[in-house]
Image 1 (cartoon, rainbow, N blue to C red):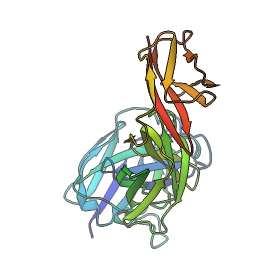
Image 2: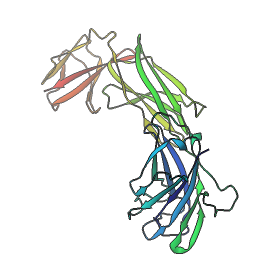
Image 3: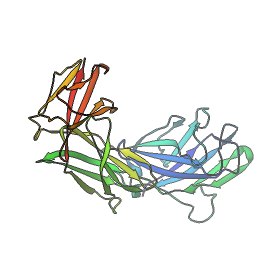
Length: 331
């Protein structure tokens, strides 16, 4: 087992009563390990009194994959032969967002990009004997106040959802979405979203998270009423605490049963007509940004767009349970 001792020098604090949590966060997308600290009792520290040191001991099979170290606030050396890492201040103030219950990154370890990491690959050694004077214990010291070895509370190593693959493909009259995750921590599930313009998305489905966290998990969803024409899909990954992130966007071109609907003239400056659409059918027009311009019944007089600004627009036409989306340009 490889170990790394961490010593962070010259941070700042104004109140001794402040208590800190420390945790590790694994970012498999950027292949790095982050050390984060938060104050749980007050909006401290600020810039008055310096923390002389923060010590902790990294352990786990991933420690040997650290290839370099980066931090915007500290000058950091790679481990010496004794596995000691030293971080020294460059006279910068504490991060402005180091307030109560806000996690702040104090250092980033760059990892071997060839590997994928699990939460169990890294941990911080706790105080195993109850005597927090040991150098490997997670402790903090404030030398200017002659107070030393303040215990740090260790929080579980976190590993956000790691997407290995996300695909959306036309399958006969349906769109089949499938995705694979490499690891999941605190994941509630995935909201499947669709858009006709790649900018404004709406929910079309939900998939609960897998019960397995540190293994490869496979998911799928079938859109049985896809948009006719080009449409876009993405995933909204939702944590149990309500936080969320998005996957990459995938496009699908569904040309099925779309040959008898067309717009003319296009580009247009006054009125646009829809060939193949019966009068009385309701259509909706959206801007490129997804703003609804109007929803109106279609007539033989076409649609008056003379008041529209120049740009790209979409007309959405219901077709039974499906939706036809057509693009036009106002010039």
